[in-house]
Each structure stands twice: as structure tokens, then as C-alpha cells.
Image 1 (cartoon, rainbow, N blue to C red):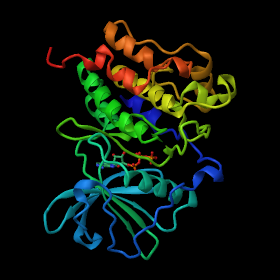
Image 2 (tube, rainbow, N blue to C red):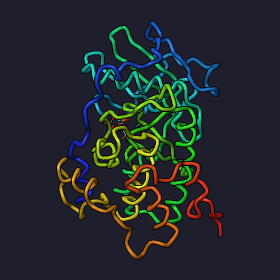
Image 3 (cartoon, rainbow, N blue to C red):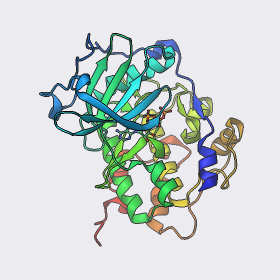
Image 4 (cartoon, rainbow, N blue to C red):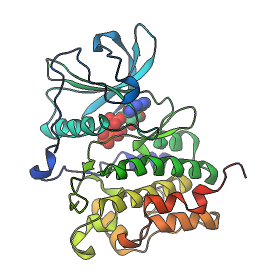
Length: 321
Ligand SMILES: Nc1ncnc2c1ncn2[C@@H]1O[C@H](COP(=O)(O)OP(=O)(O)OP(=O)(O)O)[C@@H](O)[C@H]1O
């Protein structure tokens, strides 16, 4: 596990895309004052929580430019997570948070983290109020409890596929599916989070050839679009990342590299683009192997879609049998 931790400290994030793509296609009007709230999702649309009614309890984590706090609503004692991005953050960071806000305010799915409010302070600080996921991320669970069983992973896969099905049907590509972007609560509900590098496709055939996200989980066609016909299908890219995520949670280390090896960009690029997709160890069942194989097809056209994967025996068999 120490080796896993060491790997995770390396910054494998890539820059945001070219300016033409960076601006939200549906500009998000922010509320004008400190206590203004846009409550994007259906269940919370009637309730406005002034930010002054929230008390900070502790830091849950630091992301790329922002800090996430555990906060408590003073009147109801309800616990939430509040992501705060400072007004003096780099423009890139602010663009990411705007992108995340834009997507969170339009999504409403049990497998996507719920957004309960969006705030802009006069200081320029921006905050996103989210449901609190008390077990943290799948990455945290891997480090804390070790590798996952197949039945736990089938459950994870089912839930992430449901979230992706929602996103893809709304023409949203996540582009950064990985264990540290999948939140979990004590009911073992898994929810997709962190939409800072996601993309809303305006037209079905929109090209999606920008180079954002965490490169370790990128599909071969994102690393090398020319070798795969110029454009890449971002929806299929999310499936590749899901395959790698499940693989990693099963073996406890990043799939393309031996445990403990420090992944630099060039090594990753060679491993992902030129090596065969990794195979699960012999301990894995036929069904799990087949599922991961369907996700890790190097040719994106051969990769299964969300709908196909939701009917794969690995996820659609009765979990009680
Ligand atoms: N809704 C939430 N409930 C509980 N913990 C959360 C919640 N959202 C985020 N966190 C915690 O805060 C950490 C930082 O989250 P954040 O989305 O800002 O960044 P990240 O995904 O870890 O990193 P990056 O932005 O660089 O991709 C997460 O790793 C997680 O531990």
C-alpha cells in the first residue's frame, strides 16, 4: 500500500484544452451575492441555504486548486461537503470550477454527486455545496482497506455504469474517471464526482480530441489520436478509464506498471499505446476478465458501450446468487 501511495503523489494531470474549448458553451450565470444560491438539483430546488448558515468542521481534502471542507448546517445539523476555490486562483482552476458547476447544476442522478448549491462571494471566492460522502473516495478505501473483492467491484461497476449512462445520454463525457473521483458513502453508494475536465458535447459527432484529465487513465486514442483516425470517441474513453479503475481496485496498483514503479509520462504513453492491454491475474473469474477485456479494447470501436456493459453477466447477474 505504501507503494500505491507513493505513485499517487505524482502529478499526472494534463493541462486544460485550447481556449476555444475551455469556455462553457452554456455560460453559467453566477448568483450575485454571498448568500445567493443556485440549487441545481430537483430535490433541493426549494431550499436556499445561505452560506453564512454553514459552519466549517474540517478539511476533507485538497483538489486541483480548491479545498473541500466538511460543513454543518447550523439550523438542521445536516452535514455537507463544500468545495471552495479562492478568488485569486489561477484562471485555469477557475475555468475548471465553472465547468464543474455547469455540469453539476444540470445533473440529477443517484450515481452522480448531488450539488446542493453554488455560491460566489464578493471576494471572488466560489463554492460548491455537495452531499457529504462519508467514506471518501474509492482510492481512499483502497489505501485504507486494501483491494476489493469481485462482488464489491461488480457493485461498483453497476453504479458507475448507471452514472455514466446518465451522463452519456445527456451528451456529457466525464474524461477523468479514476478511483479518486468516485465517492462512496456508508450505504456503499458510489457516485461520480469532479467534473472539472468534463465536456458537454453539443452535437453527436463533436470531436473530442482535447488532452485533459489524468493521463494514467487515458485511452490509447487520446494519447495518440492520429493512430486511431484523428478524432476520438470520448464516450469510449470513459469506458477505458472504468476498466482501468476496476482493474486497479482488484490488484491494488496501477494496471500497466508493476507495483511501485513510478509512472512518468513517457513510460505511461508507451505502455498504454504500444503494449497489449493488461490481463487480470488468474484469480479473477471468467466473467470479470471478460468484462475488463470489453472495457480495455485498444480499438475504441471494439470497446463496449455503457448499455452493452450494463447487460454483461459480470454486472447483471443477481448479486445475491
Ligand atoms: N462530496 C464529498 N464528500 C466527501 N468528501 C469529498 C467530497 N468531494 C470531495 N471530497 C474529498 O475532497 C478531496 C478533494 O476533492 P476534489 O474534487 O476537490 O479534488 P480531487 O478530485 O481529489 O483532485 P483534482 O481536482 O486534482 O482532480 C477528494 O479526494 C475527497 O477526499
